Length: 143
Image (tube, rainbow, N blue to C red; front, side, top):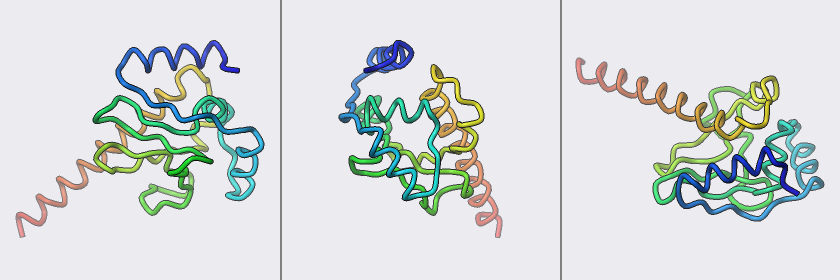
């Protein structure tokens, strides 16, 4: 059963372009995932997984969100994470990972804006990476 809050998010996504939502997972699978990886996912993110265990959004050049049951799987140990407080929940069409601070999300969990926050956090991370890359290229160029 999808909550009204989540239905509004899904409807908003569908207005934005082509979306491919994978089938949902179960509460049991989420609990297993958390226990095996010693993490606690935010309640609203778990609600999302109970609606769609991953998928592709804003096609054709969009993002792919990972699931806990359907491959690719959310990667809690990905080397592209800024710190251990992050998990990789997806990838951009460019292949860049989407690391998200699950401790930050838990602290500011409000539901309605969860997916938007995930996307905004990735955009912020990508901008930081782009600036670091440009700075590195400038240093190499001036050597």
